[in-house]
Image (cartoon, rainbow, N blue to C red):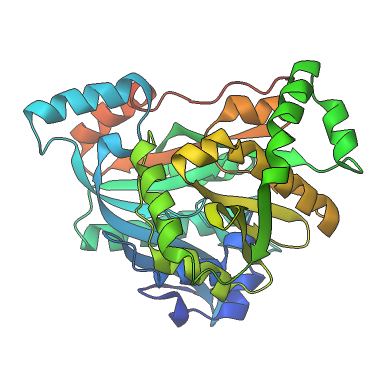
Length: 373
């Protein structure tokens, strides 16, 4: 086979045009975004990029990361309580060296494939990428291998490539999407249930108290936004990565015209900020940060939601993709959910059997089924 495999430690070692030419389900979280993540200095992570080339032409690629992983970090439900209980008695239990295909700052494995590939070719190329990914993981003494956040539309591809290598899926956080197939906000409100319409109109009465600002440069307010982030992370049920000011400032700098902030002010006081990504069709909500007391009192979560829907309408976008969690609210506001899975295995056969056997307990699916609000 005339292919060559490379694993590089910086995305700058890959050709940007060739990386961008690959077909992937998350085009916004591609080269420029991943490079901004790499250069943001997230503590505890080392970055790698797996490249498959045919006579110098990039035909398949994916980001990967290496980190020390405490198992309860991203668990929900009874599995989290069980692991935390064991850790109180054995502090070093369930701490693993993890290699992940994807990025902690994306909602997919980041897999890019040459657009002309057939399904069989795609599975073969992914299988080769997984082999290169595992070789690097083993060299770095990682025991747990994970292919992160594979959405249902890619499930068959990953089943064909990863299952024969011993990987099994475990439910992860779904992707929520709101189709912007209505002409204005009034038409959107008309689609909601009576109780949802009434509740949202009541919550939006705070709008006259707020000033909403759209901009890319946040240098003057970065410290305050980082304070909001620290408070958000402290309250979160799951907290895997720890983001930095360099991330929040660096993403808009790396993606001018495609990444920006919406800031929310009460008088002269900043009370919240929302980092967004945009291309020709989609608006992606990456992080909403707010001052805990004022933000909640001023219904900032819902204000930001309708602000983002308005931005989609003004900019002719067709999809709004909010962040993960709070799925009941998202369904109530008209979102559709796409389920995702983490495909994983441990290099130790005994540990692997135990982990895969108990996977449903460790990560019960946190999302309700799609249904009308």
